[in-house]
Amino acid sequence: MAGKDYPGTWQAFESWFPDEAACRSYLENLRWPDGFVCPSCAATSAWRIASGHWMCSACGRKTSVTAGTIFHRSRTPLKTWFAACWFVCSQKNGVSSLGLQRVLGFGSYETAWAWMHKLRRAMVHPDRERLSGVVEVDETFVGGREHAGRKASTSGKAVVSIAVELSEQGGLGRVRLRHQRVVAAGTIRGFITDVVTPGSTVRTDGWTVYPPITKLGYVHQPTSLVHSPEPAHVVLPGVHRVASLLKRWLAGTLHDGHSHELLEYYLDEFTFRFNRRTPRRRGLLFYRLLQQAVRTDPHPLRELVIGDRGNYII
Image 1 (cartoon, helix red, strand yellow):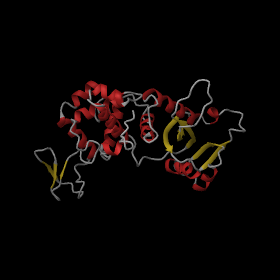
Image 2 (cartoon, helix red, strand yellow):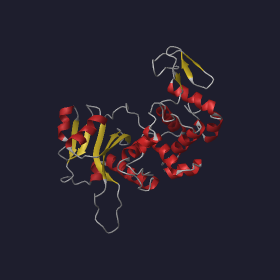
Image 3 (cartoon, rainbow, N blue to C red):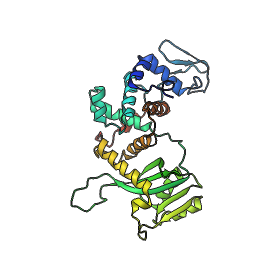
């Protein structure tokens, strides 16, 4: 609830987090909503020492609220981290690393790039619920640039699987995306079993990799696009709309400057935003992002850099 769990506006944000102590207290409530729990021995009895750390009364371990999170060992004030989270969440279409660098005044692009990827790691919870009900599933190609007058080519593009819930009113529910590095029957069906609850109705095109899902407990409703009088975007409107929005987002926010190696994390950001597109208060996204940030591993820069040369992609 805005005003109770999170600030509803930027003015409220500034009053909620005037200093480091306020930011630290907010993170503690998110990380330990039922009180402190030692990450070493799971004891709940502890006291705060002069440095601001917690000292476990059972094992004697000193613990910071930022230890083991994306804020781990960061020398940047938490208030700056909070401002970055607010800025990223308040922009409906997201921001690029360059945009974050300019807003926060970072001296290097590398810092903004690392921060953006740390936040993306926190945008999708690994234990999230699977989709249910009626779910459309299909694949699309992303990446690469198309030129006028030339036939569309899949060369240099990545395959992304899409699954989206359909409401009874015909609207779109939650979405799940996955970069298919290897396109095969096993990976396509594996995507469905990972993101869709058994017993759900799965609507697909007529590709032959789909029918075996009926043996896995799904109700399969295929439509052969070759024999259908309707075009693909009419037969499977949900996935085609999501595919269109995804491509527009990648082109508009990242200017198609994404790598295949990190595509999965850009898909996570799109999923985070799409599944939270309805709240009127953008502060709710800020709240959810911080909730997951204190449960996400640190991911130091050396884990984020691509390849031997360390290419920093937008």
